[in-house]
Image (tube, rainbow, N blue to C red; front, side):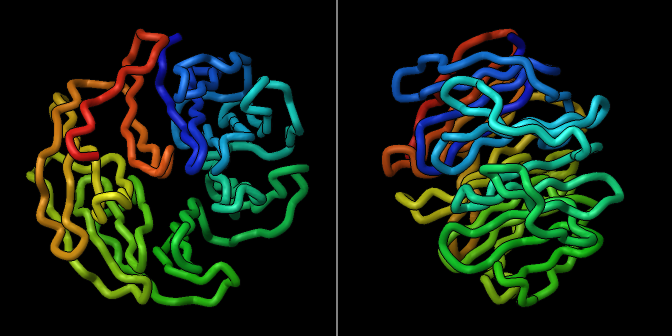
Amino acid sequence: MEVRQIATSYTGPVAATGAFASTVATWDLTTKARLATFESVLDFGGRRLAVDEAGARCATAGYVTGGLVCSSAATGSVTWTRADVRRLQFVGFSCDGQRLFCGADERPCLVLDAATGHQLEVLRGVRCVWESFFTDAMLLDGARLKLTARAGRSIAPIERTSFGVLDATFGPELLCISESGGTVRCVDVAGREVWRYGPAPGRHVLKVAYTGEMGCFVGVEWPYEHGGTKVLRRFSATGGEPRTVAELAKPAEVAFFCRWHAASHLRRARLGYDQWNSCSQAGL
């Protein structure tokens, strides 16, 4: 199976890998054993593969074929389906695993009950949602970037530096945002900028995460303009000074595991290999 998408659990050792289309495999990373392989509505592009925080549920979505499916990560058996939910670009579970955020092209973001698929809420003008595991805050990505409380209270708007957000992650009292072709910025939970990092021209940071053991943010930087080796960088929490941790060669996709066994780990899936290859932890 050619791995092109990876989704990870936050507290459990479970990951899901997706092929270019349809086929999904789930893995137990404590044993490196495959839990299940199953066909789904998954197609390539966007963020259409998600695993809940404990590693119990796996959500897959399709853009061309349409539809949304929630399955057991352990067995691949279908829990519920929503054939009416179409053109999804983003799916992601809430921090407590009870809700599923579903962002689509030119449609509001739907908030579904993760256990049943029933609609709970509609977030108008929102494409993607990132929640904090540390505070009562969430980032809404739409026509504008907005930092809000979970109850809906607006905290602060955040100015864009480019046309799109590549990734975002929260640390204690902090939020790190990476934008396409632009900067990596850290703001506090009141929306005030703490630091920013500007990659060299033709480079940007694809994925970001917070590592609690080191108290800092990490990111995977890629020379998107010409292609080439991806690099794992570490940013100090207060100043953002970058440090190269490791070169990652040219994996098709990367993903962070934030709290697996009370540590931060990076795993990668390489295109053309049906297995996991562990990066040197190099301080992670």
